[in-house]
Amino acid sequence: MAELDVFITVATERSFSRAAEKLHRTQPAVSQTIKRLEEELNERLFDRSSKAGRMTEAGELLFGYAQRLTQLKTEAESAVKELQDLRHGRVVIGANEAAIHVLLPVIKRFRQEHPQAQVEVRRVSSRHMSAEVLNRTLDFGVLTFAPRERGLHTVALGEDELVMLVPPDHSLANRKEISMEDFGSQTVIAHNEASPARDRVLQIYEERDTSINILIGLPSLDGIKRAVEMGLGVALLPKRCAHAEIARGDLAAVKIPPLRLTRQVRLVYRREGEMSHAATAFLQATKASV
Image: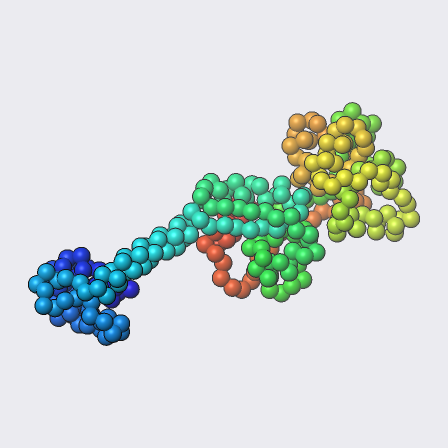
């Protein structure tokens, strides 16, 4: 590109001496650069007999391409600069529905600091999270357990626990805690997608040789919360995902000690390999938020 820059300057100024002055170089240095370019192309680019620095046919042809290449170089440099400034940066995060509520405060902080950056949260099963982060499909993942893979680091986002959610007029709404037998006898609304937390709850009931009355299965946490508000049953969900409803008085949370399953919510990322500018900034925002 340096040779083309010299060529464009000579062609624009129509003079080797004026081009040398503009480029802050000596005229022999400019002439030598043009000579090397002509030797590479095996074509004369300027008519040396013309005092006006007239280009040859080959020079005219090259001039058009050189201008386009210079414009592309400028655009490429601008695009990289925008990426460095996070104007075109993107962060991809894997999470399940419950983890979204933990992520939102971090996303808010990141967006306040970098309003042009993009954030994409994909619904990913916790079973596949570590593999997708290691395979670079995701920049980050959110888990409620420490990953076994050695190639991952984690940042603690906070603790969460499972609670029974009931409508405020439910007979158990004013209780601080109940037994798992009391919960199991209720009409239970559950997420119909398998998860480690659901598997653990079912295992506990099996170990205690008691039953749980799951009669309604729904595909989303919001759907489950709305169903509980309507009085269709009760649900065992992470408390964080119902903070707003509990604060408004739309739902009440009751503890079930054997089923609380207190968990540390973690942001997971690769131990090795370069991060994008956006991912690095998101990690910084995460650490500043906790």
